[in-house]
Picture 1: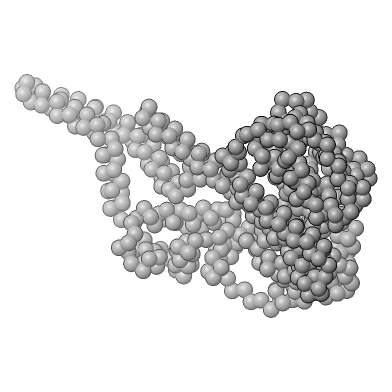
Picture 2 (picture 1 turned 45 degrees about the horizontal axis):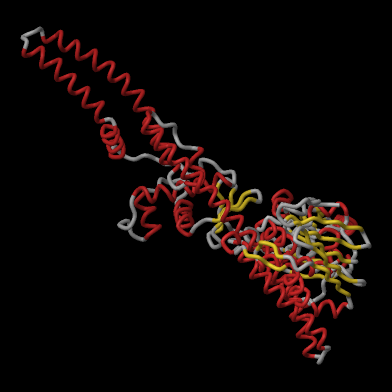
Length: 548
């Protein structure tokens, strides 16, 4: 029985799809954590995904792109959006089919059955397995129980060589030749690093001890023994000098040599006992370090304990370096993910006015409407530029006196087109006082708040008033749900209003909040459903009320 994962925020629709799938011998599993679709995929392990586009946290395009980085499970979009650009976007993101709501359940089931039949019934998987883990040499990954790990080209060559000679001992020279076609360009340590990485990737999918190292000959032991002697050279030298002193003193003093030899034997016994313990500890450290070679990400938690002040100092330095690396890596990953999230939403936003303008041009449409759509494009483009600069906003801020009325009127004038298009009034009562701030970033914050007010106001207008302490922007729009107020500045959060306006991205207020924090400006919100919303900017050193 096939498993179908249903990603739908409407519980009624999701339950209806699940129940209908069960009639046709398919297991429908509803994804409950819509903020972690990848995690739900790993939990359910479906053979097909039916996904809506409009989701509460990130849209379906985003989650489709995330899933396609690791999995090739068929994805079918089920959405009320019938625009051709949405369909093109879905296909480009990795979708296999697209159905427009409302859709007949019979058609949905037929599409699902056809996709499952094409994907699985006609597929002839001949992938080799290692303790239950499948290895795809073409796509370079290993997979077990829904967990997939990508391999590097070198790791793939190593694994292919080992699988081709499964059950046999493969020499290091053979591995080098299979990897680089010649053993003259690689040293022993480099091969060990790649082999250790391959072992760890198997452990990530739950396979342990699938690659066993056989030590060959005595040369490696000889090298390790010489390495230990060099490491403990002062200790070995002290023993040799002690033996020479005991025997030499007895010889030159004409003493009984048997007593001297007996003394030397006792010294040697204690030396051997100490050496055995020390060699065991040395070998364990060496083994741990060999296994850790090439795993810098978690090195700080796995380093062997240092002995003595110098070793402890070196260990501490390495731990600090690894911690710094982990912090930088996490920061870079978060930054890349944030950029990906934004630009995915940005592409979705900007395609709508472009498509509208194209249609208007084809039909010789209303110029006022064209100006409105062009204004949206310009606004989205400026938001993209501001988003890029948010990464280094602290270095982009230039504090200078700024007339508040001038900053407000500039943004009101720039929004004249949407005001006229929607027939909204605007009232501005702002003092001419100056405040110390960055003019362009303050203008960006005001712009986002005005844009938000216009977006959710269909009749009435917008009132702007303020002085050197605060600035309020009040509309007569649909208002904000009380439960949504604490989260409106979260990235990607759209709430109830976002579901009404399917084009909402949840990015504008998030960016405005980040810019306000950088300028030490606090943003307060007051809202009543059906009566409107008031955003208030509290400039530094003034009393403020955040939510009401």
